[in-house]
Image 1 (cartoon, one colour):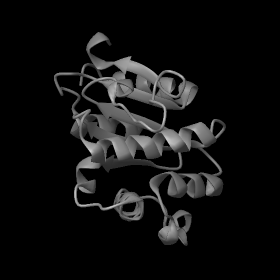
Image 2 (cartoon, rainbow, N blue to C red; image 1 turned 30 degrees about the vertical axis):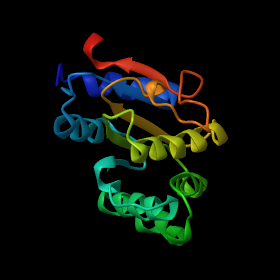
Image 3 (spheres, rainbow, N blue to C red; image 1 turned 120 degrees about the vertical axis):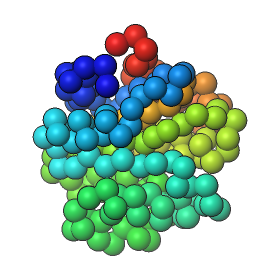
Length: 174
């Protein structure tokens, strides 16, 4: 990681902006170092990584919701927060219902988006965008880690996930 204080700086931005896209074209963002540092500095209910590579065999939004919830369970999200969410029909629905149960901030880190033409990646970004557009005042914070800014993924028929929805941070420039 560039510096020990990087995770702390990133968390300040996430607390302020709520929905953040951290990108770097060289894929140098050290996920295995960044996530523990975010957890260490985190004063939230939880900080859970969601590896989008796990969604490769999904066929539809319900499958994606199941994989998402499995990632939350594996990532250490409290069981009580996840009870009854198995019937969620999409990632956006699961995040919305989870948000309703939170009493303090929580962070979900979606990583690593790298192919702007991949329909599976676009589907996940569409779900994130749906959630964000409906929940500006939520406890749930989202960090999206990608190879390039996510506004370059064409999310038709949804509008793109641009600066109306997320704050962009170029990891190369920090």
